[in-house]
Length: 486
Image (cartoon, rainbow, N blue to C red; front, side):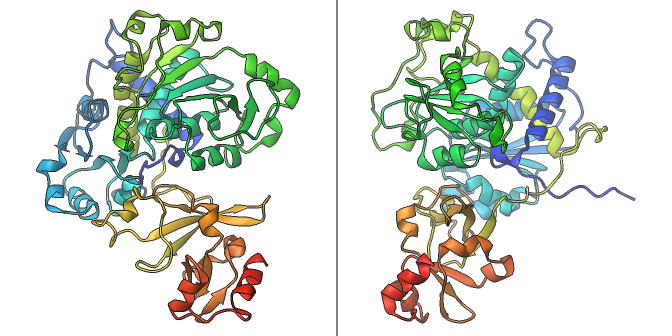
């Protein structure tokens, strides 16, 4: 009897992987390096295996790529597998108007695993929902780039041996860089201190900053005084100091220890380019990392990293600096992606050593599905749910995130993971389709059982709900306000 395989596993966000699973990826990648590396260049894979000789990788790229696409294809070839590719949307059926949902369902009949890059935030999540084969996110809009983060963590691990208590400075476009968003989540989860050095107006997005503080238990600490500081998101005057272990607040350093953290030397400087494809302005003031910058004593032992490509933000004179490891970082893309592909396809004989369960991880929050064509929608204009070609395939779905300290709930898009603004949410009205009447507001939504959630519709305002045929609350608008506040 053929052994049944686990449910299909997808990697859309770095948070789809537990810390233990990330370590498993690194263990397998290190094994490939030891077995197949170039004898003269130990971080370069130079030989092949036949582990994936019966499998095919499809690379589906709607945006330009060099390292991500070629390293994935090289990884599959080094595993003994084959590749098919659609690397230019102008010569694919996307140019004819075919939806991503239809494309991915077709590709599932041609390949065994697919890596996708797309300009829309949340596109990889939508693809995964329609795919019968594993989907790997190779970068979706400004949302995330989880496999780049795996390469980055593996590089840091190779240089510093441990990620815990590491101090990492991140320079450049922190708002538009999907690489940075995956990276900071992972750094926080492994107990690192994050030192943001954003270009003017390019601080971490508000929802990323909020997740670092509220869900990954980072505290913002002033660089000047070392005192706890609630400061602005991504402030260049503050550090994100994280717990030794996620979800254990007692392990966050006491205030008297903050000064030690502030004074600690930087272990790595991570440089990013201006993501001009994400901004209306194509020219903006931008920091440059060069020998003068790195002359500061706190960077004396800092590894210099960059996901590449670089433009003008990283001086080429640093290529010969002993601290520069960005080309090594790029080389690690092959063994790391070999490891991820082989784990997703369950190619290892010793499953006791390399368990990699299938299926989506259980969400930490309840999920509310908004009926298509009614009620609220994701406010991120670049979200895949707002793409006209995909709208009929993607319902507006939101995680219901409860903030116990503030006794209210907020909604987070399942696809792009952008939080609905509190200002917009303050006007929302919940309607009950079984009673055709208005229900209590968002503050109690997290406690509604899943079988009841499907009978609720959230409207942007009470008047919109009444216009849709629901009975207004007693007392009109004032009564509605009282009901919502209760």
